[in-house]
Length: 208
Image 1: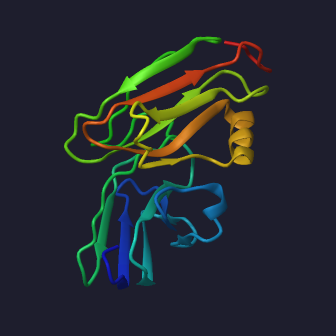
Image 2: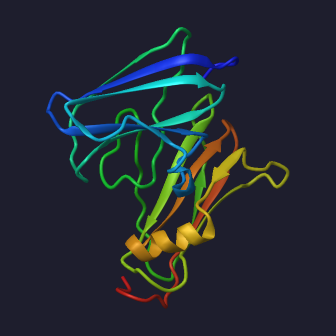
């Protein structure tokens, strides 16, 4: 939302396939579990389309979450918005997605074996800030949290932004599905970064 805010923003989500859909809007750069109650929703899931009117929006970033009622259903959709001023929209990396990401988001996969300490060098090729999310998926659902950490190789340069789950939420999510995530990180062009990942050898559940 641009400087000065918006008096009104109208959002319309249409799904030609007729799936039941919903819009939720979160304020901030990422969506975290504790923000669910403060999110604004289009209401009950509606078949084929839904509508959300927002008023007196403060300037700053917001996240739109478009979802279907049943998990795992995918279909083409159309999102239309109406506002008295120009609003910038862009795709948001999302570490909880299980499968293909929406264009133009891209996904790279690296296999990590149990006990292996992997260090990956990242160097953004884009001329502007790159936004990434990371997911380390295991077959374990108990024991110590696997390590997933992003840092800059320049000791005098801190990460511009790196959003993580709280420790309590990270532990609960790992116990539920065996994964740890980096919600969002912003990488500066020309800088070098290191992504570290390690799965402990002694974990509860399936040790694969």
